[in-house]
Length: 393
Image (tube, rainbow, N blue to C red):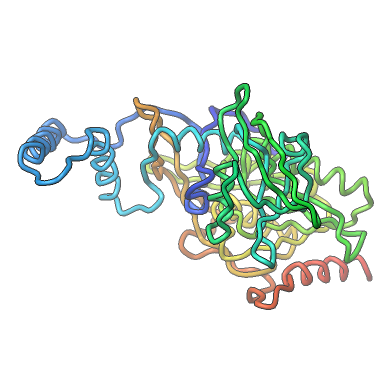
C-alpha cells in the first residue's frame, strides 16, 4: 500500500467530452501558474496579434468574435502548435466541472444512466444520494426531465449533464420515470454527490469469487477500492476479478495507491521529465498482495489504468485478459490561468516497474479475446474460469 501526500485536487472533465478527457487524463494535481513558452520575441509576438486584431475589427465583413473568444482561439492555436493531443485548453466553466469530477464531488441528482438493450435509459441512483433519498430506485426508466422527453439517440453523458446543478434551496429536477407498468413524477433536489468510481458484487456464477469495476481514478477511488475488497472478503470471496475496461484514467497518486494494493514492495512507476527522473516506490502492505486476482482490459483501458495493469503484469500478480490497452504513457499537469480557465500540459513520460514504455503501444493481455458481438461477456467468463482453475486443484 502506498503512502501518498495529497496535493491540491484538480480533475478531468466529466459530462460533455468525458471520454476524450479521461483518455487524456493521467494527470497530477499541482495547480501552478507558469509560463510554458519563453522567448526574447514574446513582446513582438503579442504586438503582432494586436495588430491583426485591429485590422480584423476595422475591416472584417461579418460579426467579429468577442475578445474572450479571440483570446481563447489564440491560446488553442498556440497549444496546437505543439502537435500534442494531450496538451490543451479548458475554459472556466468546464475547468470547474473538471475539478469537481476528479475531486469525486459535485452538485446534482446523483444518477448514473445505463442504456438498456431496448435503447432506454435505466437509472442507477448513487447509494445515499439525492435521487435515492427522493425515491428513485435502481431500474427505473428515465422518460423526461423537467417535462422534456429525454433524447435517447444522444449519449447517456449528454443527459447526465442535465442532472447536475448548483446546490441551493429549490434547485433540482423533476423526473418522469417508468417503474414496471407505472409512470411516476419525482422531484429530486440537487445535493452534494459523492461520485462512486468503484462498483463491486459477489459473482452469481461462483459465490467464491468477487467482482470489482473501477470506472476512473478520482480522490475517492482508493478508499472505495479498499472497502470493496474488505467487504468481498467478508462475504467469502477467495478470488477477485478487477474490471478496468473503458477506464480512461484519472489522478496519478490514486492510480499508484491502487497499484500498491497488489504489490508487497518495490517500484511502481518511473517518471521521466525534461529535467530529471523520479521513481515512485511502494511500501510494505496492501489488501491484495497475496490474493488471487485477474484483470480485464480493453482498447479503452488507458493512462492511469495502464499504470495498474503494468504493475500487476511486471510483478506477476495476476493474469490480464481481454484486448490490448490504449497505450498512453505520458503525464499531464493542470495549470490554472487568471480567468479560472486552465491548460493541461504534458510534462513527463512514464515507464512500468521494469521500465517498459507503453506509449503508443499499449499492454498486450496474457489471454487475448476479441470483443464479443453477441452480448455475452466473454472476458468475464474467461476471468472466472482462470480463477476457478486456481481454486480447484
